[in-house]
Image (cartoon, rainbow, N blue to C red; front, side, top):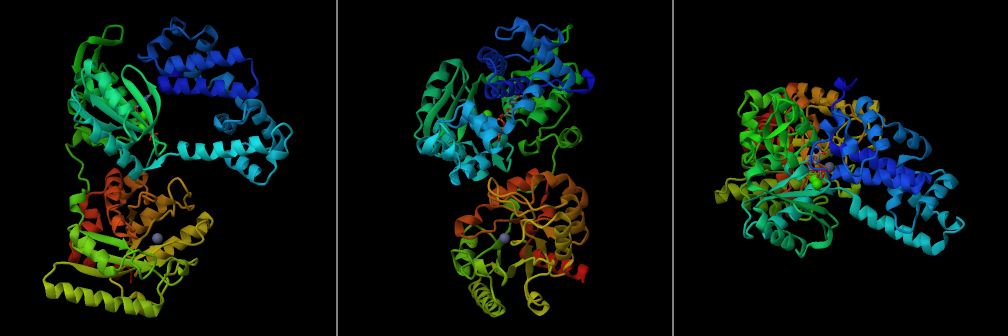
Length: 596
Ligand code: DGT
Ligand code: CA
Ligand code: CA
Ligand code: ZN
C-alpha cells in the first residue's frame, strides 16, 4: 500500500505521536508510557533530517528518543495511514477534550470526570456548563476553582484563535521595520500563511538571511521588542515570541546562501512544498529547506552536489518552472501553469480605479457621502459607489423610499459640484439591497430602476437550509437589477460560520447570468472565498473588490481584497472596479439588459 500513500512529513508523524500522548494523559495511562510518546514527538519535531530514509531502512531506533515500540507504531502508520495505538485511545477518550488540557486549574482526572458527569466534550459546552452553574456543583471543584477555570478559558480563547489578515500584517510590518536595518541582516521577508495571503493567520513567520556571527544580537533585538510580552523559545536558528495581542511570531535566521530555499520552504503551503519535492524527486533531485541537491546512488541527498539555494526563482527555474507568486502556492494547479507560463495575469492594487460598496451616515456609516467621496479622491480613486442599507435592514438604518429619493438628490448635487469644479470624480447611486427570504430585492421596480448599480446581500435568515438558500440566491442573481451579489456566505471570520450554499452551482449561475459576485475586502469577511478561484476562472465570473467601508479607514481594506482576489486568480478585466467609471456603468447596464 505504501506506494499509494505519500510519505508523511516529520511534523505529521510528530503530531500523531503528540495526539497519543495527550489522549494517554486523559485516559490515565501509565505516566512513563505517555512520556515516551511525548519525547518521541518532540525529538521528531526538532529533527533536522527527513525521517523518510530512516523509515525505509527501518532504523528509526538509531535516533535517540525513539524506542522500539514507538518505531513500530510509526512504521505501521506510514504503511497503512493509521496508528493503531492512536485509534485505540480515540475510542476511549474524545479528541475534543485535549483542548481542555490547556486550561489551568483543570487536570486530566477532573476533565474526564466532567466529561462523564455531563456528557460534554467541547470547550463551548464546558463554558455553558460553567455559566449554568453546574460545574461548581461537581464534588471537589467549588466556586473558586470554577472561577479560575473560567478565566483561563477566556485567556485561551484570546490567545489560541487565529487572527485576521490586517492584524497579522500590522504586527509583521512593525517587527520587520525594527529588524531590517540591524547589522548583518542581508534579507528579510515574511513567510508562512501571511506571505501567501491566507484569509486568517495562525502564527506569523519571519525569515532573515544573516551570517552566524549576527544571529545572537538579532534575536536579542527581536525578543526585547516592545510588542513582545513573552519569549516562547529561543534556539540556534529560531526564536518564537508572543506579541501583546497574543500572536505567536516565529523568527528564523538562515545562512544567506540558503535564503531562497528556506523562504520557499517556510512560505509553504505544506501542500505546495510536497508537490515541489516530488517534482524534484522525479528529476533525480532533492529539495529541502537548504537547497536543491542531486541525489546520490543510494537515492539520498548529496549535500556536496548543490544545484541552487540562494534565490527562490533559481530553484523554481532548476525545476523547470517560472517563479510562482506566493499567494498561488496552494497546490491548486500552479505547478502546471508555471511550467508553461512565465506569468499569470493577476489584479493589482494599482488597477483599482473606484470604490464600490461603501456606507454613509444615511445608514450605518460613520461619515457623510461628501466626506467619503473626498477620502476617495485623496486616495486617487475615480468613483465611489455609495451603497447604504435598504429599507428592511431597519437595525442598520436602512433607507425608506423617501430617503432613497432624498439621497439621490444629495448625490446629484455633489456630482454637479465636482463637474463645476472640474474634479474628475463621480458618485454612483447604489444600494446594498437585502435579499429578502423569498429572493426578492427590497424596493419596487420603479425605485430599483433608479440606481446606477445594486449590490444584493443576505443579512437575515442566514441559516436557511441549503436548498432554500440556493433558491433565494438564484432568484437574486436572475433579478435584472442585481449587478452583483454581496458577501455571499455571510461569514464573519473567526466569529460566525458560512450559510449553507452550493458555491460551485452559485458561481456557475452567476457567471451565466452576467451577475458579478463581490470579493468583500473587509478582513472580517474576505467573501467570496479564494478557494473558489479556479471555478470562477473557468466560468469567467466577474467580481468587484469591495471594501464594504463604514468609515474612511475602511476604504483601505481594498488592499486585503486585492490580495485575496489575486489568490483567487482574478485578472484585471474580470474585476469591475478596475474599469473606468464609464465602463463600470456600461457593464452594470449590460448585465441588466441581458437579464431583462
Ligand atoms: P498558519 O501559521 O497556520 O497560518 O499556516 P502556515 O502555513 O504559516 O504554517 P506554519 O507557520 O506552521 O509553517 C510555515 C510554513 O513552513 C508552512 O506553510 C510550510 C512550512 N513547513 C513547516 N513545517 C513543515 C513540515 O513539516 N512539512 C512541510 N512540507 N512544510 C512545513
Ligand atoms: Ca505561520
Ligand atoms: Ca510558524
Ligand atoms: Zn452587507
